[in-house]
Amino acid sequence: MVDPELVTAADLKLMQGLAQHVTASRPELVNSDAAFGELAWNWGRRHAGEGAHGPRRLWFSGGELVAWGWLWPPRQARLDNGSVKEIPDAYLSYQVRPDHAGLVDEVIAWYDSTAAGTERRVAPSATDGFALERWAAHGYGTDPESLGDTGSWTQLNMRDLAEVEQPALPDGFRFRTADEAGAEAAVRAHVDAWSPSTYTAESYRGVRQAPGYRSDLHVLVEAPDGTMASSTIVWLDEVNRIAQFEPVGTHPAYRRQGLGRAMLLHGMHLAREAGATRMAVVCLGAPGHPGARGLYYGVGFRMFTRDAPLVKPAG
Image 1: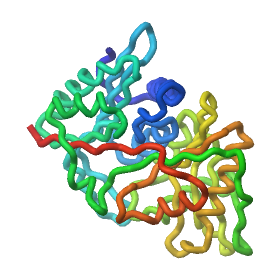
Image 2: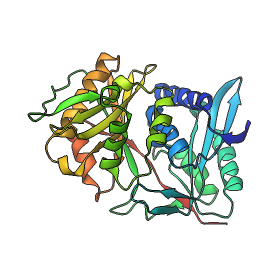
Image 3: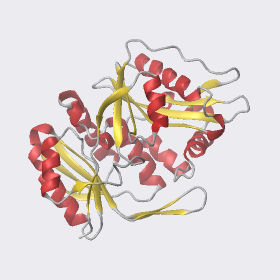
């Protein structure tokens, strides 16, 4: 076990390595926020953009990483519209290798001691029955707010890349890479799609430093007036030949024109050319959030697994 400190790029590579191991052996047990691409995106954008790069703890066996916990403490997040978002509770991202499942108790104990006095949230895989039992034994229960019609639980969607439809953009639109568009345009594309957002030029620099980032797999759609109307990043897990979209967004003024669909299809072709045989993407799963799910289902994705949001009161 390694003492808690902030996650470094070297740590992130180890954590991604564990994600690759679990994906290869028990893919249904990969927590959605602990997937290869999700880890890279969260590390890149958050360690710079939100200034809340929380502590982590790593567990090793025989020199190999077999479990980790990454805590996001209560914090304030400054948004691009000048407002400040209060995040009053703690959240834990974690992963345990299936053949060391019992370590989940140590992960929970570390979380409870490090985040004592705050409300604590966590979202293990809904298929991980052993972990769910252990979280319950430590006082964690189903989070009714997250499971409501407009709740925040997420699902991991998958599809194969054997056959991918050709993308079709409206006249005057074209695909660009992040290098072609430039840093300022790449940042603006994300902020426009997700405003109010914490994303900044500093966040983007962090993302570019994340292990696995490739500017040729950072795709944008440019409108005839030069606006970057849509954007996504493809993260390639070369070990398992799985690529993941994260994030995916379209400027509000350019929605419902087929840009997101075309961009996803284009991204899947790029991923396949890079060696991927399967594609993944995470989205909100509650009934009140049909937009992204409908987009992904429309290009062949289907739910593979989902998370089970849990909460423990402050104390």
